[in-house]
Image (cartoon, rainbow, N blue to C red; front, side):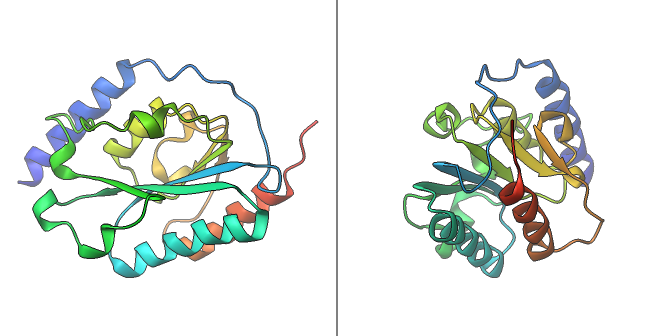
Length: 184
């Protein structure tokens, strides 16, 4: 089974590299000036999901971001979707069953992809081909993420983090830089 998964990932990376990135207006901003912030993440468990919820609430309350939302990838079939994922509008998801044979999402995520978020923050600390497709096709004005995600070339702001870094440690670092970012 692991061999098939690795082949799918290699095929996914191959096709992803050949796709054109979204045409977008690239502008940098900090969290204090952002009107919309989106988070990308790969779901692990309910505790991790609650951390994501706290981050979405935090940017909304602390920085006054009007639109804060999250899109998660759940590496399970839809029938095994955890109950906590069936949430409100600001927490969207797609599942393993929503991917084609080379791991490209085939569900309609056009609303998310077409929205020009001021900042898209990739919370992954490991590679994920399905989320790489989302990252490549998003029209977000600024994309930020960690070097461990394997998608540094798609970011406008990449943060070097150590292997084994927790989500809380990563958030403290990216929050520090994105809240203190000054652009001329």
